[in-house]
Every structure is written in structure tokens, then in C-alpha cells.
Length: 434
Image (tube, rainbow, N blue to C red; front, side):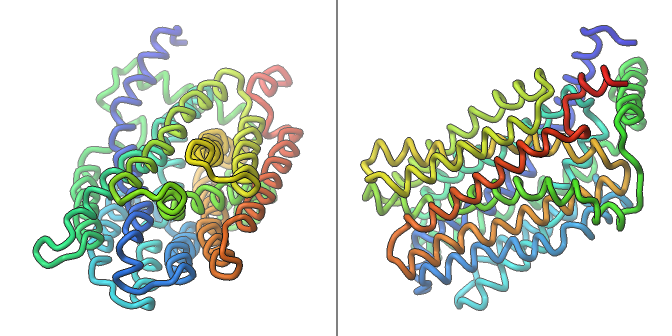
């Protein structure tokens, strides 16, 4: 048995080796998602896209993404994370560059759909990959070190996108075209680097000492034997009711989060009457709140062993922010505070993704994780579409925010219910019961 210092040294070594590359991949992936919201500040006017057209095009990405999640993750489990994650990054980077040639709504829809197909499997693939490298008591923090790319992409993407829009007219290209071109090239390069840098499993980690490697392999194997998970077939995993139940709070989270990601730049500019650059800075500042809450929530989740309560708390934050945005007048300070609260809810993600491996192992875990992410990610289609629909029909955002608040509260209630199930209790309780 390793002492506490050896355990910390091993986990730290694994974190420093793997997380920077995985963080970079997800950061670039999320930059690719949020950049369309920034691009809309010019693109919608240049191409004469309505709010409904943009909302549908922004959201259709997630239909392609959701449809291909499960097959993509099953391929990853078969060919290995290193090869498949590299393939995903390279193809989505090339397709992002191709977005600069969009001219019509149909081209916009098609490009976004293909982009979703290309990127499918990145997130669940990394979640599955990290489950082989980090023990349960360190997993939420490890996941937060990867998932924090979500708010960081907004922190970076807002100001960066605003600056790239300022290139309008250079070499005859619009600012939004420069944005897609410049933000599409880094994933191609990082994907190629990941192909030669990532290590598949702890057994292959020659950059760990023999003692560290042996401890990590033994610790993860021991946890799997203590948890009542089974290595069922991937097809049976897709029918597991626990996987579908976990998809409910994740769907709620994703719907609210992506509605905010795609519409916040437009709503900020309309509410605060700012230009492109200042809008980007404000959007980045709002996202910084989420970046701060991620590690705090992950530490709380790991130390307490509580996952479901942290998820419920995050979704309740999201609901409170949405209700406030619907009810209250949008003075600048109040607006920024409320939308920051609404978008702070994503700190639920690390805790959610600690749960699937409580009841699934091996390829069945890859299938179950992909299913949860596929169902949840479809909320990325509905969230932007909800805001776009109510803007077009009613002329304001209030009804859309009420709908998002109700969905977020539903997710919180389901999370509280899941806490009552033995599979989702803290590991300390399971160990005591054993």
C-alpha cells in the first residue's frame, strides 16, 4: 500500500502528464462551439440570418453530435483513445476552417451538422479514458481539470472572438471568416501531437515509477471490485435505466448552458449597448465565474464523496439565474450578476461524470457514458432553439428563460432522487456497508 505522499505524487504525475493535452483538446473544441455565437455578431447581418435561422443552425450541431456519440465511443474503446481522439480533433479543425465558406442557411445547417458528427465522442471518450487513470477519490478534481475548458473557452473566446471580428476587410474576408479560419487550425496541430504523446493505459505508463504504476493499477482494480458494476454487453448498457436517469440532469444542464453560450453575446450587446470588442470582454468576464466554481465544486465533491447533491445544487443555481433574468429589469449590473449565476451551474459536470462507472465497466461503460452524453448533448440543440423561437414569436426572452428554469429544476429533483439509490451513495458508505 502506498502512503498518502506516494498517492499524491502518483496522481499529480498523472495529472501533469495527461490533463494539459486533454484540457487543450476540449478548450479548442469548446472554442469551436462558442465562436459561432461571437461570429453571429457580424455573420447574421452579412448573410441575413434571422434569429430562428441562427438558433436552429447553432443547435443542429448537437443533433449530429448526439447521433454519433455511442458508435464513436465504441470505436474508441476498440482502437484506443490516443488514435481516436486525434482523429476527432483533426477532422473537426478542418471543418471549422470550412465554416468560412458558408453563404446560405442550408450551407450553415449542413456545416454545423457535419461539425457535430466530426466532434462526436470527444467528451465521453475523455471521460472513459480518465476512468482508467484516476481513482474515485480524485476523479472529480481530474474531470474538473479537463472540463474547466468549458468556461475558459468562453473567457478566452469572448475577447479573442471580438478581436478577430476586428480583422474585417483584411484580405477581402469578413471578421467572422477570419474567426473560423484562425480557430480551426490549432485543433489539427494538437490532434497530431496527441497521437504521439498520449499513453493508452497505466500498464503502458513508463513515465511512472514501477511503484507508482503498480499502485495505480491495483487501486483502480480494487475500486472496481468493490463497486457493484458489471461488464455487460454495450447493447445491454444502452438499456440500463440508471444511464437514462443520469441523462435527465445532464440534459437539463446542457440545455441551459448552451442556450447561454450561444445567446449571451447577442443578449449582452442588446442589454448593455456595447460594441463587438466590449461584448467579447463582458462575455469572458461572465464565464470567469464558472471557471472559479469548477475546482471548488470538484474539491467539495471528492472530499465529501457526494455527487448527486452537488449536481442538484448546480442545477438549482441555474434555475435561480434564469428566473431572475425573466422577472427582473436588465440593469447592467443586475444582468451580469444574474447571467453569471445562471451559467455557474455547469460546475455539476465533474460530479455527474463520476457516476456512470459506478454501475458499468469496460466497453459497456464506454457505451453508457456515450449514451448519457448523447441524450444530454441534444439539449444543445433545444437550448438555443428555445431562445430563438421565443425571440421570434414573442419578441423577448422571458418565456424562454422560464422554460429553461423549469427544466433545470426538474434535473435538480431527479438528482436528489438518484441520491437515494445505493449505486450513487458516497464510496465511504459503500465501503462501510461491505
